[in-house]
Image (cartoon, rainbow, N blue to C red; front, side):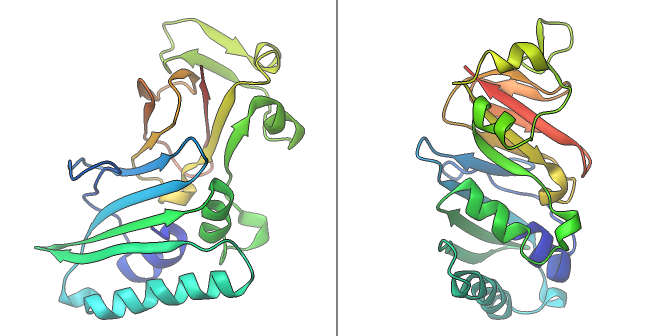
Length: 209
């Protein structure tokens, strides 16, 4: 969902969220990236009459989407919005990580843009997104690790770089199209999925096999 735009202005806080696959509920939002680079976001948030009506929320979301598309940028979609007891369920899709990042950063001052990148390690270095880093196997500090110099040798590998400001510093699960090899310390890795619980301003880096 529009974490930095709609969630802050209307709902304020994210609550119980839904995973991106099927209807299995989890306690945090899930951002799923497909092999073609598309992004799917499946969310459930607390929602009551005090927050307004469902129609008002839908209109607000669609207005943000229309404004984004009106600037000639890639189209995004609200696939579903419905009331589920004390929650509202939203399903958002984006054609690319770039469109997701641009949309989330759309109303933020240019000096406060949050990073969201998915591409090759080589491209990340070219874009100046990789500083002095240490990444651990499965995000586990007790396992093997690689540093910046070693990472440069994995130019064809894919990397996901993310500032959790885009999720209001709340827990999030990232689902990638390939199994994860190395990640920032403290990230819980399970195959292609990474559970993140970091403050805004902290860059998360995940390298796939």
